[in-house]
Image 1 (tube, rainbow, N blue to C red):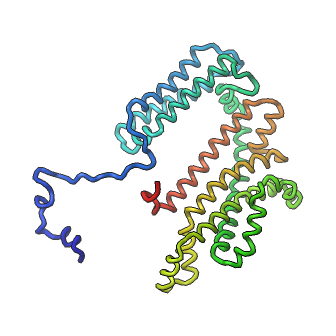
Image 2 (image 1 turned 90 degrees about the vertical axis):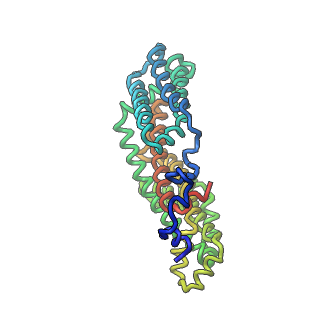
Image 3 (image 1 turned 180 degrees about the vertical axis):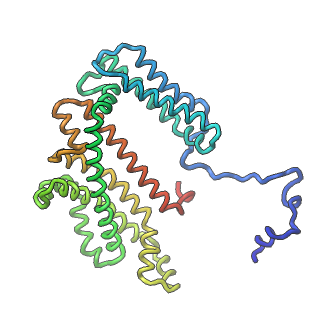
Amino acid sequence: MSILSELVNSKAVSKSKILPEGTDKIDVVKAPDTVNWKPKSKVWTVLQIIAFVVALIENFALPTVQAVNVLPYRIMLILFIVYLGVLYILSFSNERLRAKFNHKAQFYFAIGIGFTAWDILSTKTNILPLPFFPGTAQIIQVIVEDWSTLLMSTAYSMRLLVIGFIVGTFLGLVTGILMGWYRQWYYWFFPVLKVIGVVPAVAWIPVVMIIFPSILVSEAALIVLCVWFPVAFMASGGIENIPKSYFEAAKTLGADERFLIFKIAIPGAMPSIFTGIYTATGLSFTTLVVSEMLGAKAGLGWYINWAKGWSNYAKVYAAIVIMAVVFSIVLAIIFKIRDRVLIWQRGLLK
């Protein structure tokens, strides 16, 4: 038994000898929050709500010079105010929620001010003229009125993205692990990776459309291609950068090749692999939109191209907003998976 265990379990060590007289508990120093790091402020938590209230009052007070239904926009602002107000009340009884609410306060304040400025410059004064600069109210109106088409386009794009992203990530992991572990695979595949991978995936559209007669398969192939390169490259580099001493120590203890690959090489390369996945996520969305503009019959890229043809830029902006929301959700899911897989890094990195 260690000395520490003896001290904890020994009845001879009394509380009065460990703690000063009159002390009931030991103050534990908490580690700094690296996620919600903004200083605590009672002002910003209130100002963010006021910013949306100002945006709502401005929309009611100033006359509208553009033909637009402002009711959906006003409902959206009211929902924002209610949402922030509920969080503000709940934050008093939840320390974790209070830290998160406080951290995002300045950002939400900027959004509220941005809504006010955008509404004044477009819907209220027409300083930013139509059709190129529709106001927030027009964009919200399009989302409400054309929700069925937008929902169908989003579902089609997500189906294409998920298929291409999963297949591309799998092929990238397999290729990267083989290149990082076996010299023969690196010898043959790395030149191919350098030649094919650095070329933008959209440049392969004519070739892919000839090889794959189906539009859906050709679009998915482009996404697979743009995802495969960064994942394979980062996985290979991550394995190569693992210190050799780790493998030598494991071999000394009797580890076989399978153990070295799956218990040391792959876990050690996970930070680099997730970096490749982040890069691939952005590239996949870009490739998705461009590919859908060149022959698809549905999808957000098709919707943007169709709306642009009719000079309906409110629909273009509406599709961009939906795309930004979907992209944020996908990134949030990836971050959650990363935090789960790389939980051992918590507190070690900045």
